[in-house]
Length: 166
Image (cartoon, rainbow, N blue to C red; front, side):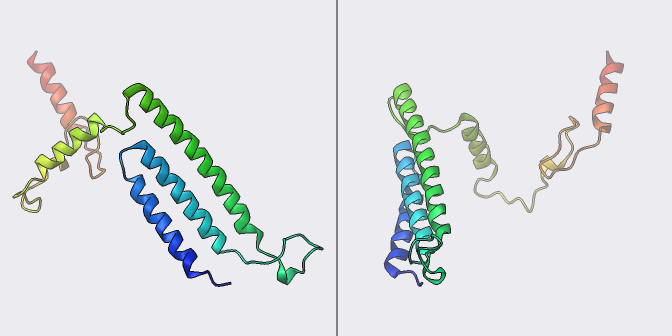
């Protein structure tokens, strides 16, 4: 069975609208995006099945039976979408009850990291010309951003100098 072009266009529109709504800050719009994505996934799964009679042995010839797998996958997708909808409704209600709105706020730590990145990568800076100071071992035993673990020698030397100077 070849899928109908109308179904393909509707699936594309549902997915596009769902992703667009998921990127919003309002939990109500995120909820609508999840619902649209779930409906788009259900329609996509149904277009993959073969039309025919009920898949019950003895009532329909095997060549005329419909494929039961897409139907089972759609039922599973409906349950998953229902669970996500219930969770997002509870989250949205709780946010509305506590804050008076359902918008997701910025995380303070994320905002700080974005500000540091903006200052570090401002206009006129070129990382290729300057050595990266994060690649040098700090002496605190933590791995550098590239995954290397610095040697314990700088930390031991610093501890020894503090012991002698006191």
